[in-house]
Image (cartoon, rainbow, N blue to C red; front, top):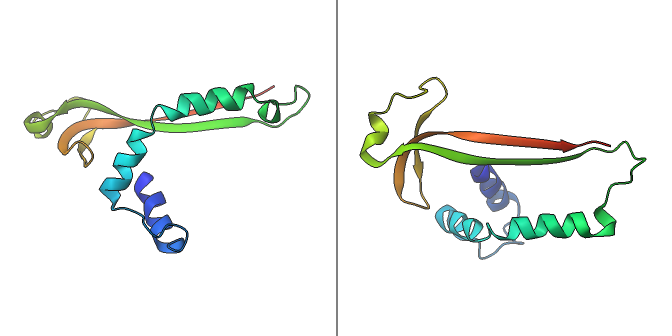
Length: 111
């Protein structure tokens, strides 16, 4: 999904991002922001503009995903754990192969 966002941005918004780095550089910069997201969530929850109206029927949904690494490096091609939902992948930001799966998380707040 991150790669599709990167490709979409590169294809349709080059004037907005004239110094867009390579995909690996993009991932590196994105990973450097990981401590920002809890602070951003706290800001959104504390700011009155973003507090949901208790009488409102609007739902707020958060979506996230993260890799779960079962094994890495040379063991990646030998591992057979949960083979129906796992596969070998490559982390370009860590320059390593791994065997694992991706956890997709969806949380909805409803009044």
